[in-house]
Image 1 (spheres, rainbow over the protein chains, first blue to last red):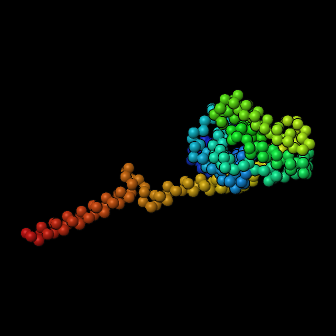
Image 2 (cartoon, rainbow over the protein chains, first blue to last red; image 1 turned 30 degrees about the vertical axis):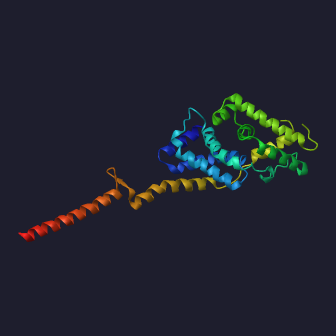
Image 3 (cartoon, chains in turn brown, blue; image 1 turned 45 degrees about the horizontal axis):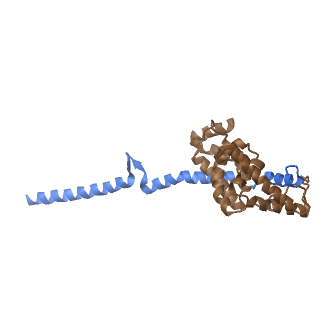
Amino acid sequence: MGEDMAIVRQVLGGDVDAFRALVERHQAGVLGFVGNMIADRHACEDVAQDVFVTAFRKLASFDPARSRFRTWLLVIARSRAVNAIKKKAPASVAALPERTDGRDPSDGAMWREVGERLDAALADLPVRQRLAFVLAEIEQLSHAEIAQIEGAKIGTIKSRVSRAKAALRQALKDVVGGES
Amino acid sequence: MNEDPRYLAWIRRRRSARPAGPLADAVMRRIRLAARKPARVRLRGERVISGISTRLWAKAGVVAAAAAVAAIRVLSIAASLH
């Protein structure tokens, strides 16, 4: 956070190239969030670029007393992603990069079916539930931060995450041989 | 559900999914392009000098030159009449 603010001050002081450091520090988080919301990889990168270009333009409005830089970026990412996710489904887990640690307990046909069911259930979630679920469960943000991003009460966020989980739980139950 | 290994595997896969891309290069290119736009516009004549765009200064210059030529002609005609 302190390092982010130091870079922000540098950029606001006229050192445009310093912004690259902010992009490099936060691109994985922004790409991860957007990538979990938008299916098309190129569209995902376009949205992620838009997020950073917008952040650069609005940098003077960032207030470290109100939020972390990452949270502020995710507010922009949320607004950019919302329009895109209305048109596009989230990326299929099958299309995501393979893990190479070999610890995935769900390889093979069953994994594919579980992945497809959960992907479909995620895609079917209402946009706000999907956003809350991705931010809470995948991006692992606190409910307070998500409330800040969404401009909603913490209780509302908890409720959205809970409803999203219930829908996914149901999808998992529907898989043949479901354990839940 | 959170203990279900299939759910956990799915979540892990999604957490680790980070679409790669030369994001920093592309972003910095777009920022520099956006920053250059005003300079390009200035080259085409929209720079502001003393609160007036150079395009207006140019028009004012043409009008002033035309007026000067007209004045010289009037003066020369007047001189020839005397």
